[in-house]
Image (spheres, rainbow, N blue to C red):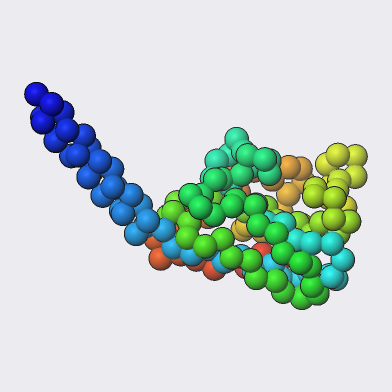
Length: 152
């Protein structure tokens, strides 16, 4: 009876291991290019989100296997390229901002209107908080590079 139990466990482990190989094969690199960075003060923050209920909440950004869902880079005028590494194929949205004062958050006037540069995937026109659906895009298994325009 013990031998059968161990065979079953070995079979389950093999299946789970095989599934892990499938999901990693369906992950491609994501590169985000921020275009129009105004100056070199502070830093850049890019958040990757996989659900509407967590969109724009940095502490709840998508946890993508070994890749952090929030990436940071030094600010420099012009363009900045930020890599996320392998990201499983799927639907995502990005919110990025130029943290000009380096306080780790997007400053807002009256808690709503950004006072620091920001960028959203799909570059939607917004007159309030952006929605996940209007910013969502697909990342195919082979990966993707996406360019976002920073608005000040």
